Amino acid sequence: MTYVEGFVVAVPTSNKDAYRKHAAGAAPLFREFGATRMVEAWGDDVQRGKVTDFYGAVQAKEDETVVFSWFEYPDRATRDAANEKMMSDPRMEEMGAQMPFDGQRMIFSGFDSFVDVKGEGTSAYVDGFVLPVPEEKREAYRDMAAKAAAKFKEYGAIRVVEAWGDDVREGKVTDFRKAVKAEAGENVVFSWIEWPDKAVRDSAWERLMADPGMQPDKENMPFDGMRMFWGGFTSIVDTASASQPTQRELA
Picture 1: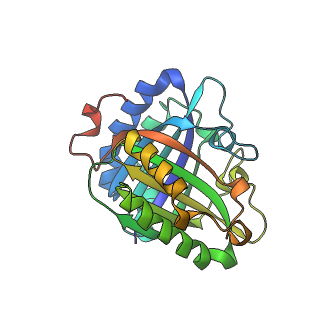
Picture 2: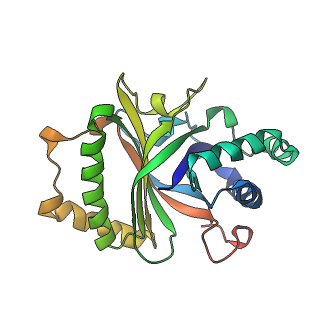
Picture 3: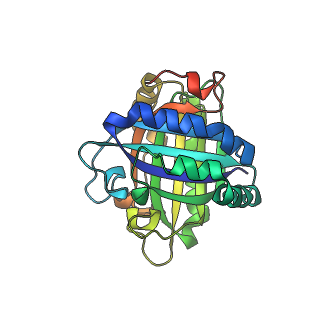
């Protein structure tokens, strides 16, 4: 299955266009290094949580917006080789000196997809999720997620991916484990649902919440839902799009 490098970033809201241009300009380089797809999605419907949320994950300030992003690779070996090339390529050093956000608060890690359900259509809106799952409940979580993914597809989702933490890095300021307050014996899942637009997404969630077969068994959930966080994001760069990233209009 696809190997995923997942990112969450806090970007000054006033830097939206600069960020989009920065990411779009870097896309051909990442493709050269072996990435098969790169997506950058700008926060649109990102709620504050009681225990965890996207804002806390990257210590976002009041004037910042959260970006949910990922690179796709055919396998971890390709991802690892790409990261080695990035470390030694002068073009990456130049881009690093011009980042329109605080890289110290960006979180990123490698995840191995274990659910990947595909529908049809062009992606323009993304629901992103990050959550802690006990290692011993990996298969129970995968089974539950696969069932939900099939229902999301039925309701209009273009793709649903659940990716299990494989190379979850410890950060000095922020990281994925801190973001979900992971406990001993827990791993991190990075997940997303792609939609053709926000209207389809909103309708799908309404139908899902009303579906008797999709009501959660709160007594047997394979993870702590209080520490899961999620939000809705508008795609601003997607190398799978028919148009080139540099030509895409701001959402």
